[in-house]
Length: 281
Image (cartoon, rainbow, N blue to C red; front, side, top):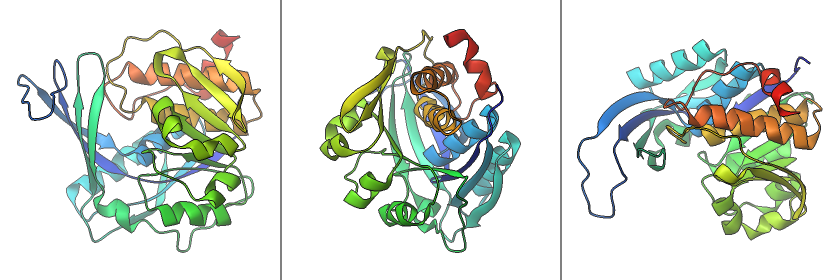
């Protein structure tokens, strides 16, 4: 099969500064011997890059600063095949994520929002046949605005975890969280469809709090989990909006996440989405 999906990602764009160390430091501790790298990131940009590389027609709505990092982030998105005409130039500096990754791929992340605080939906239109994917690294009022303005399929990646207005929970066609985020958001028990990821244990789809599908994780050699969840979000949204059966879409999303975790970059290369389906049947 060939997917036919138009996807708009509304969200954050960050310059990632990553220190890779043998282990993560405890509070107040310094761990030496690190390796420093800089790369494009931000949950929104990661999801947009993954969606485009998986084969969806993808545009990004966001903001970058008037700096070299902003220009580099735009170039990276265009190289992935993402339309960037909906990305504004803000007055603040481009958002930055400070990341620490250990030898097992576990991470700690601190985000400085910068230009992401200036993301706006002014002048943006959404089509009925267009899926929209967003996350919580932008202002909550924008998520509420999307709930009212998006006529098509709306996916909310509720990360980082914070309480969602009831109107967002009621409107979202799909909410995606990890196991910890789900435990922190009891309101999701009433959501119409929730995907919960369990890392190496797989992921599940819940309808009004009842599990309707589960898929085991694929084996992977973890390098960094920074962009894996974002790739999963893009893949699951593409699968479900392309009419793929829920269990099969879940397994494909797990496969994409497994591919992402084996790469250090938060915006890795992918095969087209349909390439992750045949080996899963």
